[in-house]
Image (cartoon, rainbow, N blue to C red; front, side, top):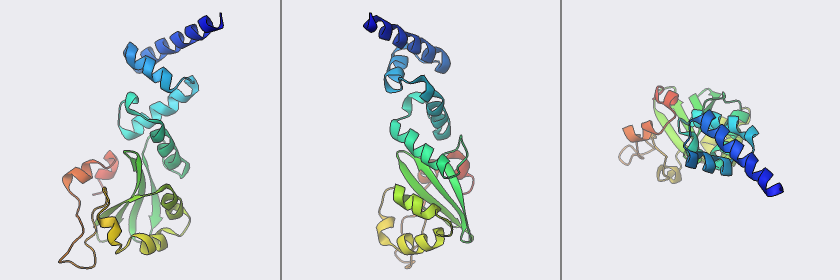
Length: 180
């Protein structure tokens, strides 16, 4: 009897997911298996919208990543938050399972750095972006070779770090692409 009740509840959820998100039966079954609590569905849908992906492409890590951006003051529906700085425009964003720091310096040059969750927290602390950037990222050759890092000429113009390509720019959240 309990097994039948659980089966009926699961079937109801599958039908709701099919209708709410226009999913095939197989996709709805997978979705319900991944998110059996219907109360989680709106957040998953919001994350899919923020990342510009299909709801079936959202992973748990994406929900956590985007939620951390929103907790920092990012707007719901966006995958980034802006930090006020005298250096120019600074954005922390989440994409493809990772966090990034995008700086668009006052002189117009952009730089993109993959960062950790702890880097993100440190950068977001009031008044620390400039200090953290200068201590950890500026002129640090380590960041020129990390996948996702680009845009900084570096101290030696004869040996520039990797500059942004059109493919790099295309990986940015859509509304951040306009700044580059």
